[in-house]
Amino acid sequence: MDMTMQLSRTVKGQEEIFNLGHTLRPRHRQILFSVGNGISFGELCRKMPHCAELEAMVNDLLQSGFIQALRNMAASQAAPVAAARPAAATVATPAQSAANLENARSYALEFLTALVGTKSPAYRKMSEVQDLAAFNAALPMCYKVIAAVASPHQAAEMEAEVAKRLAA
Image 1 (cartoon, helix red, strand yellow):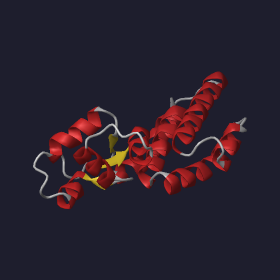
Image 2: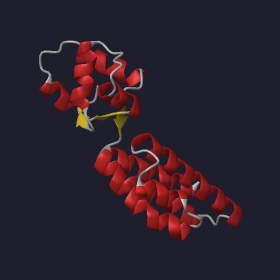
Image 3: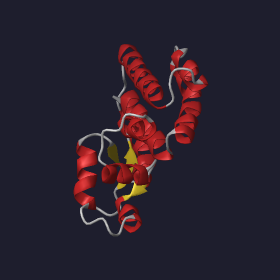
Image 4: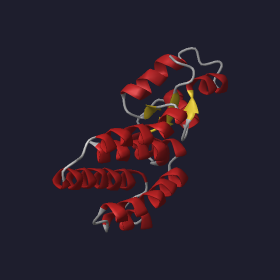
């Protein structure tokens, strides 16, 4: 496994840690707890030097959806810029643009619901969006909330996916 691979808990992983009904064995829970909101596999190895089966257990957690592998942060931050370039090169029809906006808006609302719930001011602001200008005005608040409540990695992941959906 790549030592620089960034790992982060998923919503399912958060629920395993914070809810009363535990489904994982203690060693898997310990790894899940150590992963937290973001850590590289190398850092995790240094945190748990005596865990002989760490790689296999991390793979188990990845396969079962308790943790996720994130892109390198530099690549995540560059992805929205790279994803926006093809959109500028091709001219989208108004119907395509509206569909892309609704797709990106729906994704953002689902992402917010999963990580912060529907009572967040960011969720309310995004749910009221009607056009691209309002969407672009609401996005920074959404990213800040995700970064604060979940992790900067997940905020970057949301940002990259929103840019990709807008450019589709």
